[in-house]
Image (cartoon, rainbow, N blue to C red):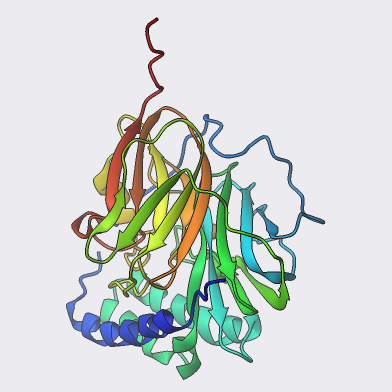
Amino acid sequence: MKTPVINSMKLFSKTAFHLLVIFLFIIGCKDKKSSSSEDPIVLTEEKPKTEKSEPGVVEVVTNAMDFQLVKSIPSGWTTFKYRNQSSDTHFFILEKYPEGKNITNASKDIIPVFQRAMDSITAGKTEAGMAIFQNFPEWFHEVVIVGGTGMIAPGKIAQSTVNLEPGTYLVECYVKMNSGMFHSSMGMLAELTVTSEKNGKEPPVPTSEINISSTKGIEFKNELQTGRQTFKVNFLDQIAYPNFVGHDVHLVKLTPEADLKTLEKWMNWLDPKGLISPLPTGFEFMGGIQDMPGGNSGYFTVNLTEGRYAFISEIPDASKHKMLKEFKIQKKEIAAR
Ligand SMILES: [Cu+2]
């Protein structure tokens, strides 16, 4: 089993902090809503299994501003099936906490700092807000992001698979309310213990691969077809972007009139109007995979129908980083006899 984690997120955190200081002077903080739903996007035929599930599978449910999931799981390749039963778009990110730290520390020392900073930025006091980020405790730099699902539209299921080592993890969604309040401040924060017992699971068999890197962006073979697809996402490297997180992959279905510039601007939580729910019209998120340290791979599974789609990273100016890629899926023509 490959070791995911640790190193590169230390890098993430340290770099993030340095960036923070520099960014303080540079940032010009700058900016939407709702979703359609029709297509049987994701695995809708599956029933929720909140109590007992098969080994290596974790059901996560959101009814409103909550995460319902088991408290403890064995380590190894783990498939998360995240059922969003609320009326908002959400996601969850998995954060491996340093030894001895847990949700109590996060609720007391981390989430409030993010919220105070964001409140200040939202109020137009950008510099003061950015300065608040310096109040994180030293141990926060040891937190490692190890995947999680991409954003998922109301009523849909996101499915992602990652390799988890033993430890204490936080499950978080930091989409924001119109007021700038993070969903994590409203209850979308949960703790998950991964034990040293092994689940013995193998990673899924992918139907396609996506490479993502800071230099080449999101790369994939544009020959995707309808039906159930499992993407293997290879994180060739990882860096911290000006919003302090790393690159990741979200899949979004686009209506014909959807404006990609609007989407790109929305995908920056540090922007007062970014990551605000409800999201701008024209976009239906279908999951994906959250940041992972370089050298790791994660998987996500979706049911694709015909239509216009995009892969996008939750970073500022995704297109400049080649991390906003639009594509179409057409039904295969039936060959003439
Ligand atoms: Cu949320």
